[in-house]
Image 1 (cartoon, rainbow, N blue to C red):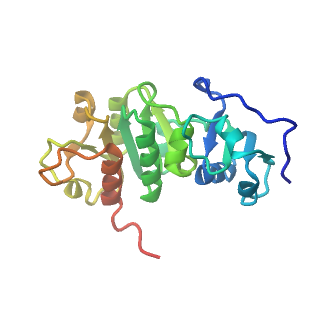
Image 2: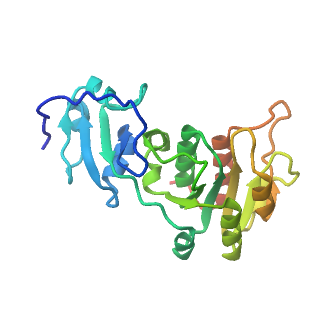
Image 3: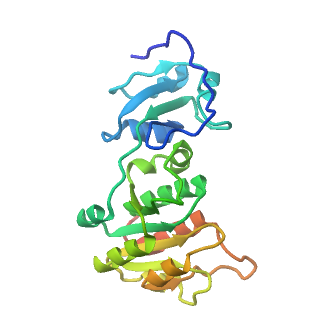
Length: 256
């Protein structure tokens, strides 16, 4: 049953959320997916009257507020669709545990820094059967509401894996029989050939603009490129990820 707070909470989102502390998630897909995740611990659920009608019953009841009151709790410009949830972040996984759990498709991001790109990569990973994403412990954004909104719920199903050293993580993957393929525009090896026939595969993507760092590129089993028109120098990293994940998963899914 929905409840209305005694008074509106109007504190502006004026500082970064404390590292490791609760985060705001917003938007229908992101919030619904979080509410369905038993690994989440919730603190506050805000919803407009219309949005509250779509909510499932569960362990937390929404506080009925106006859209403006939700605006006041979130970053400027957040498209919340009348719903926002404050919850603890999900626990990060260790690469060894994900490998031991039977993962066969993993993405590795070398200092991808834009949270919108990161969220889009999570979404593509979920769509094409990639069950984990390796991020550097430092020099990679935290999984906040901006990432969650762009991921459209995928942060609840694709495991966040943090590694101190990306090159070392690639060595671990190779030791576990993963074929590690780094995307690099200078490579002459077409992506479809590089991923063909690999039972276990890790797709490695570099930072926006600078691409893979030399040590990370060297740690990959091979480098490959996505053939594109000569008029275009490169693709956005999230678009490149979607294409690479599709190529690596081709044949694994059939139309319904």
